Length: 389
Image (tube, rainbow, N blue to C red; front, top):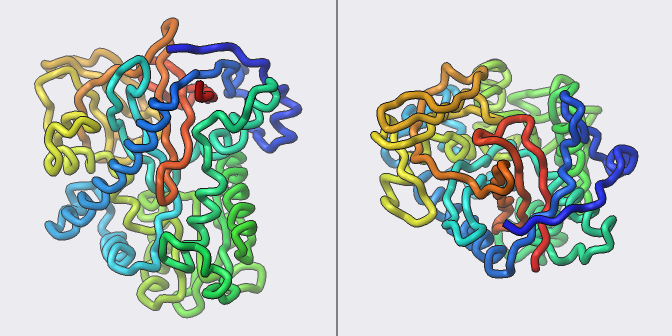
């Protein structure tokens, strides 16, 4: 890997820009002062991989619903009707997601690790901070695979046009409102959500923000807050958390969808893509595909990684050898979720650290960022910017 050093942005500047989670709990900087150099060909390969993988996920989603496999994906039963309805009705538009990929540099083949399709973070730093870092270092900020803001802006318009052509947004738009919401007390999720709100406002929507405990859910009136009714609710809260921890809210949301008085972003069907057990479905449908790693619901008999269907932030992951002995592992709160086994594939590395590529998708691949950490990337991984040679 070709990596150079950057002059870092100060904590004060990061806060001014809006990144308040700039320092980890061990007092180390979250934003790395490294810059990964990639070629135009590598950038194009990441772009192509995201587009091809998304098409594969769509085909896998069709397969799951046609063969009634939502239980296999560990999707909570209370969400099944919502998943099917959102899949079948065009108005439920997938706003954005993030592919986590291994390889792509130094001649290593790109391989899918997982798809964060429902509530992906790392968005603000990928869209804004790495651009600001290049500018701060007097580098050309345009030499980056980073069209995230504009792609999101156009995809918000597609909520109305439901088509690749967004030129008729103003003609079709009827003053519909989007309420943006996240949980109270998580500044990273709040800033990410407020960034998305700003993009939607720039696209032409009437918007507002509220903590989720301030939002009213009515099966007759839809989404209510601050004296307004909202046609759309964006919630940076995982669908599985809503189903498991807030079953009353999930029931109301299901009734609101049935009554067609609310549209939720990201839509309920994204929980299929979010489930890591979809990796096994993909391997069944596309065996030996060059972008995939062998995956199954049972041990593979080779060096492998055990993941949980809805694990997050590197929790509850085990790296196993061919006879299932643990080589490395992390604790976490997701052990009750079903398992999936994925063939081990080493990340690109440099001076003892590992680097994972993350490609954002909003109708098409639209941006790249990197995470740096140990063999298992966890919540202490660092964000690393990139530039195109």
